[in-house]
Amino acid sequence: MVVLAGCPPPVANTPSTASDSSSGTTTDEAPTSTGETPTSTSETPTPTTGDVEEFDGVIAPATRTYRPLGGPEIAAARDPLLDYAEMAIVAVGQTYAAVYAEAAARLEFAGVPEAVYQLRTRLPAQAELPGLPGPQQVTVSPARVLDIYARIFAGRDDVASTDDGATAVTVSASDMLPLGPEDQFELYSYNTDTQLLVFPNFNPEDMSGSPQPDATEIGEWTIAWRPDTGRTGWPLIDPGKGDDLWLGHLVAGPLVPEPMGAELQDPWSFAQRYVLAEAAELSLSPMTAGAANAVSGAFETVAGEVVSLDVRAGEFMAELQIYDADLKSVGCFVAAVLEPGTDHPIVGMTPNLGGINVYGLDAPVDPECMGDECDTMFVTPGDRVVELELGNPYPGDGTPTLIVQCSRYVFVEDPGGGSVIDYLAADLSVQGRLADLAAGPIVPKLGLVRDLAVNGVEVPPDASLEGSASIRRSASPRRSSARPMSTRSRSARSTTSTGSTARSCAARSAASAPNSRR
Image: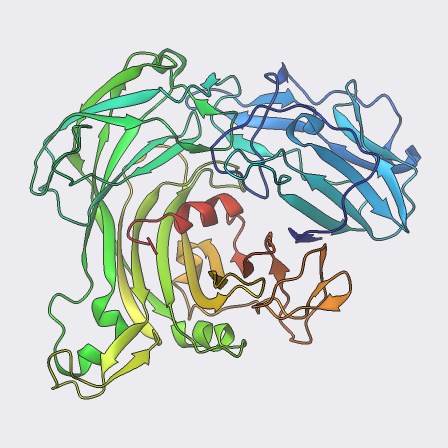
């Protein structure tokens, strides 16, 4: 099955459902849920439309399984149509609408012929992009049963949530390691599936109560509650229902403390590393929407682990060079995160355990030359064996997972005029179980998207043309997939995973990993 998140022609004659908006990040695999709470069941409902073989069309089971902390699994049926503005299958030039069969807890697309088809879905419009339709995803498959809505989710199924922008947490924490200038914090709850990366505010006029450099405690730091989540809105944490809440301190510093000589010509000499060095399990009352909810705790040091990784960044850079523009504004991150579950993939947020960020470098041609008058050359990150330090304080099941991603940006003038400078962004990522990827060289397994076309017209990545985009298979032996594109900027991305736990949630978490700001 190939998933392309591009911009195919609009879906026609499909049902449209109203949906609450949410600023939580949405993933390709687990779109932000909207609508009513699922109805829990003890077992998968019995289909009423006959066996799979007897149904003339395509079905998609829609019973989710939830794994809360300290409790048994819960099966909950939910109509996937509630999560989308549009949904239909297109096959052999015909459109087949989706119908939710409640008694069978599944979607049914009646009459779809036995052929390769496209499942086209569109999410609700995003609040931050007014006037534009929501992202569209296209799943290409010949399968008669689509198992893309019946997944296992981290946490409980009955989490309450809010869309009240005044909701906040006021954090107090003692026994903290001295705060460094590049340090960050992360709030994480497995049971409510929430994750919030927070930068301290060192502005002296800041009134939030943010800790300042060298501080050894946090005293009433008020943080707006806008966590990333796969749930509806912003989940509200309720310890009375077994919810956890952790505050991780990600301590950052240079990979090479004092580069000298030839090290000045190596981007890795200026890389930044970070590690989850300490964490506090926070105490709180059930969260109230629209209020500043007090949370408190004490940090405890996290036992660290060092893993040696053979990162072949040179091979990533070679693939990123397929476009004609000079290879500038490039970088890579190596991020270790914790996937929920151990025996199979589980949809859920992935807290950061440690990582390294490295960027292209304007290096002196003569390493002995000092000052602004020196001739420089642009150097991209090369192959390197790095020692990655990580910490994992979280109890229960979990799989340490590694994401290695390299990206490049090419700034171009908008062909539409007005001297607007935009950019082409491309990235390659590999993710999988940390232990598996540490066993050998880490290299890209997919190539970048090639042969972009809009309505059958080829369009270079740095050009603009309004219309609907289609993606053709590249002549390269590597397979590619494309992310959403707009008429103002282009983005080409490819991802490959090894092991059973790698998912797009982890990629999203790593994309916002500490010190990866661009």
